Structure formats: C-alpha cells, structure tokens
Image (cartoon, rainbow, N blue to C red; front, side, top):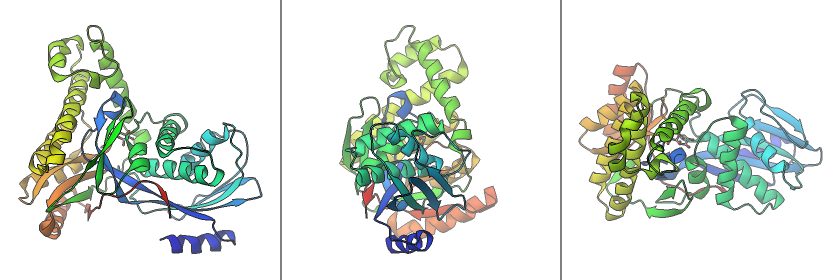
Length: 383
Ligand code: GLA
C-alpha cells in the first residue's frame, strides 16, 4: 500500500511525499460502553487501518485529499478552525485545530489519506484518522507528544470538535496497540497493561453487519446522558465518581434510588459489564478461552437487553454463532447500532463458519455480511 499511496501522492501533488504513516482500527474484546463510565476495557488493534502520505508545503495551506472520498479541502493556515459540514476532513482538521492553538510552529501540509477499514462499521475509523494525524504532525514538527498523549488529544478532538462524547478506548487502542496482545485499560486512571492474547486453535473473526451507523447521529450521546443521570441518583447514598466505582452488590441494594426503569437498566449493564472485564482479565492469561467466550456472549446479551444498542443484524450474527459448534463466543463490538461483531472460531472451521453464517444472515436480513479473520496488530507507526 505504501508504494501505491506514494505514487498517487506524486500524481496529485506533482512532488514526492516525505513520510507515510499508518494507524490501525480496533476491536474491543470485552468492556462495552463503560469507558465513559470509568470502567476497564479490553480492546486490541487490528491489521486494517488508515494510511497518510504527507509532505510540507511553503504555501501555508493544509491540503486534504483522500482516496476513499471525492471531497477535498484546501484551508489557509490560521489560528483556529471550526467544524466544516460533515466532511471526512473534519477529523484531521480537528487535530490541526488542537495543535495550532498551542505554541506549535506548523507549516502548510499536502496530505493524502487512504483507509481500508470499513467506514462507520464500528472499527474506529474516526479514532484511526485522528491518531494518525496527531502522530504525523508530532513526527513532522517534533511536538514531543507521546502516543498516550496522542490518544488523549484525539479523544478531545472527538469530544469537542466533532461533538461525540466518546470515551478514551478507541483512540488509546489504536495509538498503543501491540501485536498479539490485548490492552487492559482502566479508563478512569488511564493505567494500562498488555495481556498476551493467544487464540490457540481459534481465530478472531470480525463480522461486519454492513448496517451502516453514524456515531454522532446515533443514540450514543443519549446513552452517555442516561449514565450520568443514573449515577446522580445512586450518588444520593453511594460515594462514586463513576458508575464503574459501584460493584454489583452495592448496586443491587441501592438500585431503588434510580426510580426509573430505563436508567436502571443502563446502570445495570455498565456495572455488570465492568465485572465481566475483571473476570476476563483473570481468565485470558490462563488460556481458558471457553470461559472467555461465555463472557463474550453474556456481554452481548446485556448490550442487547439492558443497554439496547444491538439490533436485529448484530443479534442475528450472535444467534448464529451460538448454534455453531466451532464458535465459543461472540458479541457486538464498539458502539453498536449496527457495525461489527467479533467471534472466536476454530481455525480449521473458519471457511465453513463464514459460508454458513453468510447464508443464514442473507436469509434473515436480506443482504450479506462481511466476514474476515483478523490478526491483532501494532498501533500507529511510520512506514
Ligand atoms: C465507541 C466510542 C468508545 C466506546 C465504544 C463503546 O467506539 O468511541 O469510546 O464508548 O463506542 O464501548
């Protein structure tokens, strides 16, 4: 891909690029919708992602081009920017806006992006392009930003410039990913550790429901607000900064404080999901993938019934997985409302699994899913 992108860059800008960078997407193994509730999550970076070929220019212009989208933007260097419609370039623009408002000495850039992640499929294409741009600018202008800080800065861009109240998980996973390891991240303290993720005789399958979702227009911000509201009720008697500070036992004896069935369900998901991550953390290093798989199924059930972010497409995938002998666990991954599911499937049955799932899904939903096997890869890097 690097060589092809360099060639396209030359054709477009009539000069050579100076760098090519890559940032992956991610899947979350377990710990869904709890990063913005101070919980622990367990994502890993995947092999698909976003590329950027870039060179400085002396024109004081940021030129945004992308092989995936026809829209382009040429913006003069100025002290701040605001979101410009719904264009893809708002993600890198938000990063530039954040970096330009500091004391950083930036110059114009010619940028050509390309992504092989399915867009708006819940694999963090937005975090990928944000962290990619932060990493690129840090490298080109020597800004002294660590990968961890690149993740935090990118999350700020998503929250304030793009307007989605996301947690830190996606940006952290794509910035800090490590091949063959899951990341156990405490989203309250930002402490993390790598957990070797050896899938043994299984393979990590990613199943794209091909139902597009748009995070900023989705119910995501609504869930965020519901969690804040339920926490407020519980804080009448419990000392907790986040929902995930509360354990199941205290929740059970205080859930009456919420006095709203919907908010109670939301809190119940968050608190039980955090405990599933705690168990998953113990189980994963022992290689007990069967138990890990059961936790994945339980997580999905909770997201479906209590948090209500799944949908018939993702449920159809997980329902099929439960009936397939060579599959030991599956769940939706990411924000939900469409997007992708993940599953642990016996390596030597993957082709059969993929075929049968495709037929089953096509019959129920009316179009095909995308099924692929994924490696667990490294985070953002120069190529
Ligand atoms: C999206 C957000 C993340 C996280 C997940 C749900 O991917 O960007 O911060 O909240 O949804 O776990």
